[in-house]
Image (tube, rainbow, N blue to C red; front, side):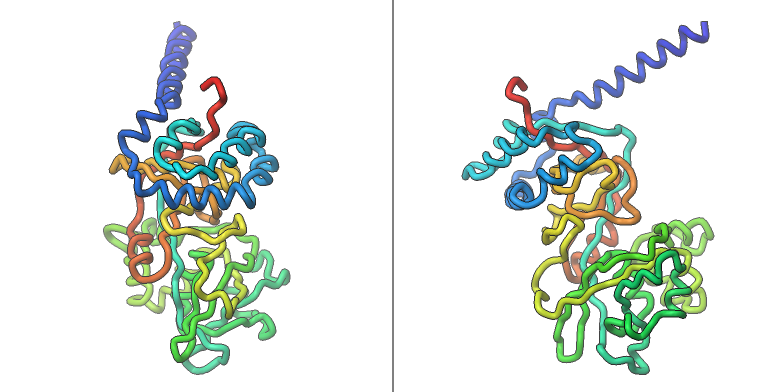
Length: 337
C-alpha cells in the first residue's frame, strides 16, 4: 500500500514538473513581454555571439544541453537581419527551465566613492590591489596588515568601500570632479556572507532590509560597524583605469555591461553569454537578458542579479530590487520544432 502511494505521488509530481517545463514559449512571451526591451537585448546578443558565446558554451559542463555550436552559429548568423523583434525571438528560440523552485532577483550598479592618491586625515581607508599573500586572510586581517605597495587609492569611508566591494566595480571621484574607473581585481578566496542576513538574524534591523536600511544602520551605529562588516570575510581587490572613465563596467565575460540587459548568474548552471528570460513572478513581467557576470552571492538555478547602471537612480533601483524569480534559458529551435 505504501509503495502504491509513493508511486502515485511520484507520478503526480513528475506530471506537475513536466507541465510547468512544457509551457509554450510563444504564449509565455506574448502574454508578458515588453517589446521595447528586445532591441538592446539583440544588440548585446549579437556582440556576445561575435566574441564569447561559442567558446563558453563548449567549455561549460552543461554542453550541449543549451544547444550545439552549429545550432548557435546558425541563429547568431541570423542576427544580421534587420527584423530583430519579438517575432524573430519566437521563431528562432525555445526555452528550458532548470528548476521550478522560485529564487530571487536582485540588482547591482556602479557605485561612486570619494578617492585620493594621497593618504590624508580624511582619506585614510586603503583601496588595495590583489596580492596572493592575502589569500585566505579574513577581512580584518587584511585591513590591519596590508602592504603600502598594494595601495591603489585612499578613500574616506570604510562603509562605502564595503559596498563598492559588494558591487565589484565602480568609479572614484577625485578632486576637481575628475573620475577614475575602479575595476574588479580579485578576491581573498574566502566565502561571501551576507551582512543583511546577519542583521536580520540578530534582529538589529526591524522591517525591510535593503542597501539603504543597511547603510543607515551602519552610519548610525559606528561602534558596531566594523564587527558587522567583518562578518563578510570575503575581501575584494581592484585595478584602476584613468582613461576609460566613460565605459561601463566589464563583466566576468570580458565585455561591457549594459543596464537592464546584463545580468549576473550562477556559472555553475549557466554558461556566460547565454540569453535568458527573467520571470519576475510577483508582477508577471518578463525581461530578456544576457548572462554577463557572476557574483559571490549569486548562487542557485533561479538566482540572478540585474545590472541597473550608474548613478543615484541606478543605486535606488538596485537597492530596492528584490523579486521572486524563475529563469528561462533561451536555446535555438531545432529545424523540426
